[in-house]
Amino acid sequence: MRSFWINAFFFLNLIGIAMAIPFTVAANSESFTVSGIGLLAVISIIDVILFLPAFWILGTSNKLPRRTYLPLLLGYLIPYLTVGLLPGWVDVALNVIYLAVAIYCMKQRANLTGKFLGVIPKEYIAREHRARSRFLPVLACMLTGFLLVAVVGVYRAVDFFVREGAEDVLKLKWDGIYTKTQTYAKDDQVVKVFSMLHFGDRAFYQKMFEQIPKENTLVLLEGVKDRAKFLGEGRPHDETMFGIPSQFGIFNPKVEREREYLDADIDVIDLSPEVRAYKVDDARRGSLSKIAFASKEERAKITRLNQRSKDERNAHLMAEFDKYSSSYKTVVFTWGAGHTGYIAKALQERGYTLASESEERAISFW
Image (cartoon, rainbow, N blue to C red; front, side, top):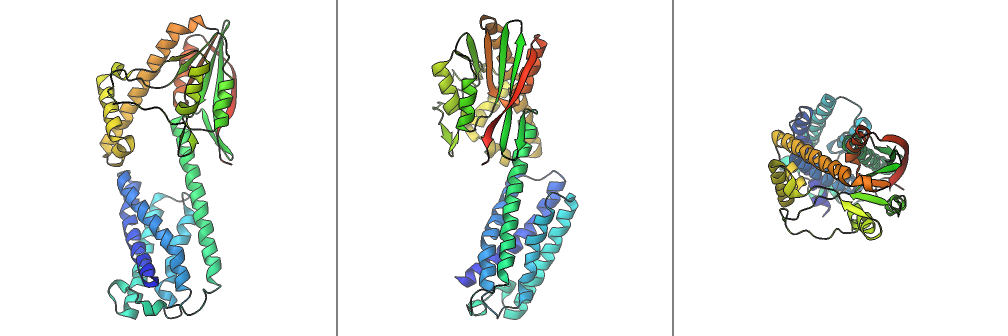
């Protein structure tokens, strides 16, 4: 088992570094595919899982010279110290260096054992004593590095989502994701715009609900309708997904039970033919599947159709607002944060002015 673990680590480490070079080159030229990067990520994750036990096993044996494996630590230390701080070409250069180091270590092992690709027989890693204490600080540094990279990676992914997907109404802070609540006024009428997240804290959804007046108020709900069943048989929304509360499973049903509301979203049958065909295909194959295997041109088409769908839904929403809003003292938009920019502009074009604005924490990190 010890021999299998060590050799699996050496093999995957070499393969992962070799794959990283063309993918980092492609990433810098924006010609990479999501599926290819996904494969590299899987190999990297397995490599990390094997890394810590492998070096612990190596630390219990004196027969394997350090030159056959210790230089491999370089590939684990430097990337995490420079991640995101240097130009893309540095990533490529580092991976070339790491590959040269891995090949050097492999040749050293091959010269030692006489085995192809430097395979290590079990007698070279037989347990001789407890793991050397000098390996403990190295392992501790590695664990800390992986943790920091994970934290930075998640933070940057969320930050990208916040900046690119929500038109400046979402804000990423140290303790969570914050969203805006805007209040507009015209004559005696008040319009509230909630920049919703489709997944968030229960406390957030409850607080949003409590801000909706009970009397003389119309809530405009989001949710594409499908009377003709283009998308197949629908099913009720779950209250949570992977343990995270859902707007459509918690907030919307509560509004439907306790407030006057209107399903203000468009019906699939009323979408333009090209967008409708895209929605049907999206429901059949799934967005992730399409994007993962899409070419650069196909991804550009998906982006264009998503925007067209959003534009058509926004136009339908404001048409519903124009049709029904005059009968109510208060109107509340409870649409996703990505629609807020359009709604705000449309209200201002209709003579509404921004009266107040506040932030609400939609997702808590702690």
